[in-house]
Amino acid sequence: MLDETPRDALPPSVGVGYKSTHFQGLLNAPGPVSWLEVHAENYMGDGGRPLARLRALAERFPISVHGIGLSIGGERPLDRAHLARLKHLCDWLNPASFSEHLAWSTHDSGFLNDLLPLPYTQATLGRVASHIDQVQDTLGRRMLLENPSTYLAFAQSDMTEVAFLGELAHRTGCGLLLDVNNVFVSATNQQTDPRGYLDAFPLDHVGELHLGGHDAQTDDHGAPLLIDSHGAPVANPVWALYEHTIARAGPRPTLIEWDTDVPALPALQAEAARAAAILAPVPA
Amino acid sequence: MTGQSAFGTALLDPNAAVPPGLTDPHGRPAGRRFDVYRNNVTVSLIAALQAGFPVIHKLVGDEFFHAMAGVFIRAHPPADPRLALYGTGFPGFLASFPPLAHLPYLADVARLELGLRQSYHAADVTPLALHDLPPHAILALCPRLSPATLTVQSRHPVWSIWQRNTDPQAAKPGTGAETVLITRPLFDPAPHLLPQGGIALLRRLKGRTPLAEAVDAAQVADPALDIPALLTLLLTSGALTLDAPGVIP
Image (cartoon, chains in turn blue, yellow):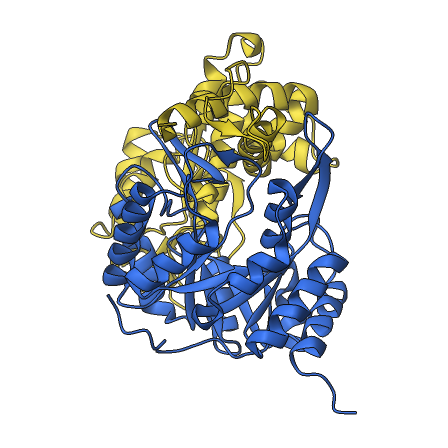
């Protein structure tokens, strides 16, 4: 178990998910954006423009490295080659934060490129905890683990997601990345109360918050089924949950995620400004 | 227990039943909820292929590409999470996909597109700079190919087909064989038509052989080789470096 004190934390202000179309705009006039998050897997080539731009951005902004492919919840052992690539990236970039997901994505046939769900049981808990230990030991740093968006439930689950995440943080010393949109999406899909989830969440462990957009569908019985799309503005109920969380937790590093149908930078900055106003209200 | 192996297998098979033990909030079978994951996997992987092979997408059309990519991604999911490198098996798949037997050049066009992508992500080196070196000094250098320099040999006019489908002003392709030299002067890979026989020279450029010696050997192998055109291309396109392998500038 690692020391719980992060070596380099993100600032308690607003960042955005970096998209290459925003490179020059962010350097010229970042506006309310004070840090950036990048997907680790996009920076595992040997060279070229992606790495050159990341080096340039890292001179200007604190960087959060967010992995999407480690499959920490996988039944299979962690992919040591992939873990070594993550270590290489974290070693040369020295990011302010590294985070991954409570999910799995590896299969006998290959990498499935989605954040797949897990049953919340003691068996899963033990496996995920040992994977987190392995990641933190290899990288030599504390990681943050993100709560997923879920679309279905496992009959075998016998713990709540909040209890599961809290126990993981306790056992491994990892921090938590609280995605407020995922809380709303999952609570809607599981027909539970998102505010109850947030009120039970171990906020002391939260090193970062995510805000993003979702799409709406319905299931076979006509019940709402929200899809975590990262392709739309943050929805109003999610803003309300975010305000509720910040009121309890105080200012925390907050990311606006917009990964598909990426808007022009001003639209992203407007979302960032809205989050910044909640983080640091202007005194009356 | 609902193992991940069974979960993943059902994700990749659109006709498979939803594995047992997956439910909605009322304990009923997950149904369409499982399809969200199924959809995420197939749509994202097909999109990754489409982003990596835009000319193939254009040549076969959107509907055909989606159906064909669906077959490919189920048979060959990515080996690891680096989607920027996904699709190394796609050219071979195209070559043996029966509905495409009448378009034998497609596989080589895909190899060209794959090469451009691999070049884009290749290691950085300092390109060979000639400054004001006199010709005899240039010919005494022992350059090697930059990591971002790649070749694609084809029995088809692969360079002309690629040009025609990325630049509407480009000439209509002929029928002859073409070899493509991909170079990346700074960050943007560019495909060039390699003069006939040029590959024999490139094979000798491994950092140990003086350029003059490599030229002589290549000319013996192919007396018709257009040496001035080939050297001009190699020395102006950023194809070469004097950096040792593995040295990061």
